[in-house]
Length: 343
Image (cartoon, rainbow, N blue to C red; front, side, top):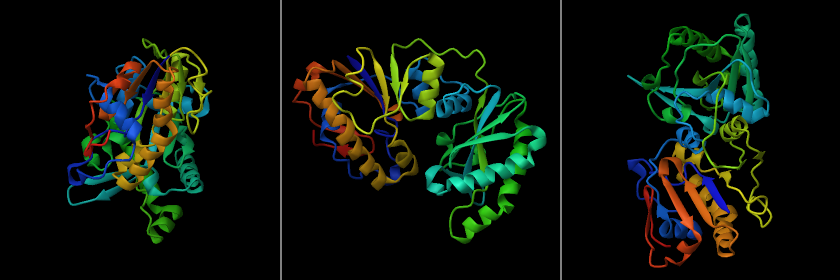
């Protein structure tokens, strides 16, 4: 049985100013990295690498519609756009983007803000689904020519570098500026700022598009085990069975279900890596070691698994086969921006 593990944020290089930090204690994962074959797969950001696994180039995929499908299990109709709440930290010449769970936005506050936006833009047919405090999906009746940048690529960078383009970009930028003004004056935001929490002073548009006749295929994956909404949406579009991700790998889980080529998506390390939170990232990777990578090494030793492919997105890819376990002379392995020397 072959297994592919998609783990964005696991092996990507850290920013220069934090290089040389402690590597996680993950001996089985380090052993796989040292003894497996480093693939020539080019590093990509999480969305593009995920699309590659599904045999798609990743350019201009309707990520918002796919994500909403993954969240709800229902194929969305019409035009869908992610409008994730963000905080823009304004400088003299730039506006640095912050978003995700680090904003500490509650679900109740997120829904309150989304309802205010729906009411304000009711004449334009705005309908917002708040799947999580940091993940908002906007559905509107009319399509638009809009090219955008995923929020993950813009975090901690100047928002001005990633302005939407396309025939309808100016119109949408005007609407989003209007939404920004509404958010700025909303009591929820004023209360947050009084408590010292980051203000939600903008919405980040990305993933624009419609599913239409989208075709996903050309890969040999036979099932998807994930909580990640984009992975689940891509699986639905490809007609693959989708399973919730278990907390840990057990004897009868994934490996005992089928004789095909399942894809397991372990994306827990992505957000702390994006946030530059090294302490949280260390704990997360060590948790993945205990729950997944150590059991996978054991499954390989028992002969349950003939080949493991690790796609770490921005961290590159590895292939580990049963016979590679005997490459004991391979010990040191460079791990992103840290040196992992105990294999």
